[in-house]
Image (cartoon, rainbow, N blue to C red; front, side, top):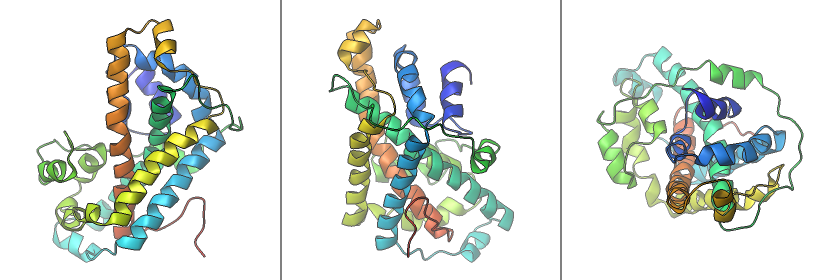
Length: 271
């Protein structure tokens, strides 16, 4: 992993390159134009705070509709050792931390497509490298082949074109997904769960105004930077497809945390 992909990965304090970033990187020249205009905002404490607030929003909704039935004993019976489960919890924490940041970036870029400029109302306070982020950067995030059971079933149930990176990562823990998916597959049937997923999508788009630096990345600005119509439309399509998927996976990762007995909030502490 080199160049701008690596730069974005490190800015997110992430040990893996998120699918949404890879999708944007496949649009020739787009990230090279927009990333320098977003980077300074990602490196602020306010950006991370907004991302963590969204994790609490997701967790609240998950706890209202989801009470896991499977236990660690079930995972052991399916072949997972205690070490496997602890490693799984560490990987899930990485996604819990990184996905909302990705959602904010993708949402800001999508919002900027229809406006002359967005952002400029956030505080420029720098974001230091935290101990938790250092631990995340040292965490190995595996990725199972797309045909690993039950990933094809996940794809069909969620209406996606490929397994999301979250599910490919957890599918490598022996027995976990076979047990957990029996419950996770039903989450979308809960109206409150679906509403909060959409709420994250819209919160992230409205949150673009709190970028520390103004962002100008509409078609006119992209054309001025040398991108042609086809490239701009490819970028728009990639953004539109990534937004709802990342929001959905934010909800699913919170359900996975709850299933492992983790319900720690990041910003708004529960009484």
